[in-house]
Amino acid sequence: QAHGAFPEINSLATELAPLWSTKIELPDLEFKLIVGDARKTLPSWRHKADAWFLDGFSPAKNPELWGAALMQEVATHTKTGGSFATYSASGSIRRSLEDGGFKVERITGFGRKRHMTKGKKL
Image (tube, rainbow, N blue to C red; front, side, top):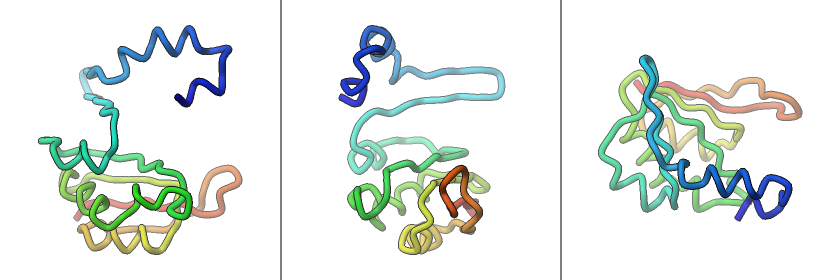
């Protein structure tokens, strides 16, 4: 759906789409992209991540992807010492992740973003 706004890359996107959910394994990296609603896919995922990039737009625009229950699932599915980063600096998100066992920091953001959030699972 997203690539519909960019018709010039439609053929490339169509070619790559079947590969999006495949696993990439390198000597020091294993990457698995899971496509779907995180509220449904994450609870059934049987692994723990080393790192997350949480990019669900702002809580005001996409509140269902920033709820306390989903942030708890992120925490549950993170290895001890694992990390996360997000462009959001929302206090409610920081508190939900802290409640899940992360040490959370609000830091200087990139580009036009004044602040962002990062953390580490204790």
